[in-house]
Length: 476
Image 1 (spheres, rainbow, N blue to C red):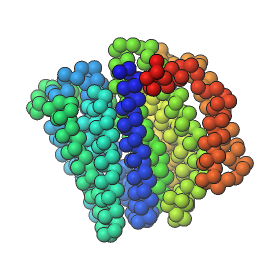
Image 2: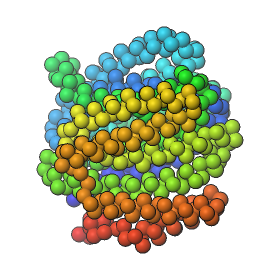
Image 3: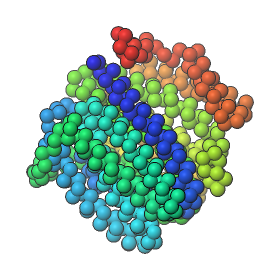
Image 4: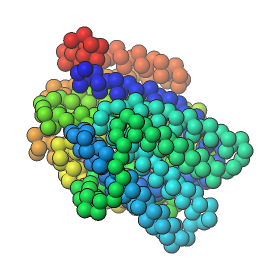
């Protein structure tokens, strides 16, 4: 089977799981936000945000390093997993006590501390699941990750419904997340043993030290990446309170439904790019350029439509108590486009062993993001945090493509022409919807038709795209 068809099948599995995930996430986002109210929803957002930042101290970049290593040599999977599992367990225990001390030192209330610690335990289960999913990605068995995602989100939705029906409150919601991730971690571990390898459990001191050292660039990259994406909710809570972070979290959850599709792209493309770097650099560059084209062709029009209908979307999903979140959503949606562009560039650099450069880029962006939040949040609250995130993404875009240019992976002129056509088609879409002033659902239907016609007239699909389509269909 060709690499294109293999990647497409893996992506198909993950796409199906992501559609189910998005539907479930959309439902529980509405239910939780309406059930908890703005303040408790702000606490939930804070707990998820701060544990997301500390997730790096559990993983230490090990999962990403293992994906790259196993994708090149699958025979080493047993030894790597056998050392990584106990090593990450040790890191998790340390992280739990560090977070506990920080929460006590900052004098958070009892409810916030309990909820955050529950999400810290959930973070450990999620991190282990990430390690197992990385192994599936490396051997291109994406269906097991997809099935795990489906199980996770269906069980989580059921547990959330039970928590709301029984009125277990915010702690019940946190426990729903914890138990769901525990169940899926067990499922993935069973599938690892039966379909990839049986881990050879040991705690080889020298191997673990070496594994941690070589994984550190990925760890710092993930840390800085998480900081600039998650620190805003944490800073909002500390600087202006739970209400502002609740509004921001409401918008962020909607954005999150879209950015979840980015995980599909990452899961499929990273091991493929790692192979191409070793075997065929011309295919590596083509994979990157086509990824950019297809991702932007989807995300740019979504951003345009969301900006126009932000208020309608917030009212539909959350109700009038969250109406102030509409301005946040109209700003924050543009991070989706930039996330996919920057993500494609980062994956290319990581696959080609330029992870140190990526780490430096995200370190600069994280520092910039913190400073921007300190300036903008006191003045503009949730809107200020959204602007800080967009500005940080723009900075990453500039730095990433500067590095790509220096390393010989700069996009060709043909890609720039395609991007111009995508932007032009999206502008046409936005102008038509703005002046027609249609209702949300009618606008969405008309918008899809207008955008597809615009792409056809602009001839966005070229011969290479047709070849890829035929390859997927098995007709080459």
